[in-house]
Length: 360
Image (cartoon, rainbow, N blue to C red; front, side):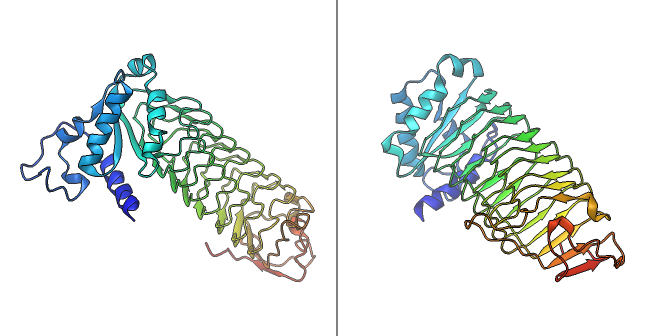
């Protein structure tokens, strides 16, 4: 509970403005009831420069902890100085120390001008609890935060154009990913693989593709949007997302590849656009809660589904058995059985709802 309270305190602190404005005289160092009451000049007292020694950084961290009951590092310097002094690596070494395992460390980079988090920068750091990135950041490189098992929050500034593969793999405490303001074009392979606490993901309109295993084994993921420009979802992209309940695909999606929604055991409904042309092997194997499917097209032969699309998977995943097919753009039953084998699935004993839409 104590760590959770500290986390809430930091989240509020991390996102309040770091302007040079004055504070009310009523704010006292001895009566701090919320982060908003912490005077700006107190925070600045703990800012570090790129060339500070490890001992100086840790000294300020301890002073800050003594004052506010959690560890923080506030870095303020230029990209050039940070690169020259290898400051990010130095900070990572400090945060990784056993001293900070119990309480974790928050890192604020918002007063820097760095443009990337380089490959492997914080990989395997078990003590990094939260991080605020600057508005200058453009890329998060491969494995940058891989296996940061305590990382609970991170912001994604509008300046970001790329997040490379495995960047957040195994960040098992990360709960929310809001990429809506970024300019990234694709979610790379394994980017958020096994982020088992991740509940909500918001993708930007710029997204064109979701690569293999991008969100695989995000077992707490409850919802995700599919932006209008998204064109492709690769194999295993959402496999083992066991909390995902609903999928509404956008109009530019044409294919669902093999195993994309494998073992999404809570998935109850899915809507296919009229642009859909094919569904791959075992795409919905293990989707045991799937009961409703909607198709916005009007011709059953337009979609080619593999014979195993809804089948069991070698005893490791049960077959999906949807009961209701909704065809809002097919007003009446053609009475020719043309829809009975739609998606390579036997609908002859199921309910086909002509002229009706799925309940969103």
